Image (cartoon, rainbow, N blue to C red):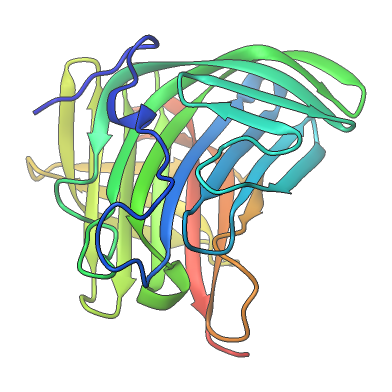
Length: 296
């Protein structure tokens, strides 16, 4: 079933945060996460909103990371349980992002387009505590004024909005993962693969178009000399292949996933780059790499 949403009705992406753990024994960490990665290539701008709150776990934080013309600002602040509003950052599930900080001010209106990626069906994120993670993504456009370290622009960006909720602690039940999202003129693509304790490989993904989705069945990654993405090779459910070649990394941000710990810890990084496909079409995207560090 194809899920579509509108700026007036975000459907599952507007699911409210949870003030208490809704099911299970509550012994594992329950997280309510929302994430938006976005880019305005014409202005050499890219950024991330990442909010993570919980009724029972540490690591509640709001983060807005933005780079414009090589100037970067990251605002990272604590969140209260069941809230996506920190001292400077406010994410409204109805589609508005605001930041009021000495180094960064912005007010972005977020609107969806194309079909929704429903990762809940195939349960690609490794489950914890006997319960799956609910997970949805949609292509978005973001428009609004930005002031970054005194420089003023009007952002006209595109990207991905993500909403997840459920039991999860990436440092405990995941060894490594990779996720890719890219936008092109009339479609987007999202795909992820996990290497976990209970099952060697989980893979899921979608080509997103206005009239529906096509399933991604496999992911291959050609890594550059630093281990990041030189090319992403996606197998589709009609036995065709979609190859997305990086045209050179523009930058990126480290991703705080959980909390300080003396033990194995997930270390993750988002890299932003333009990508092309074999017919010459050009797009832009984000590749996310996560690996649990074992030395402590």
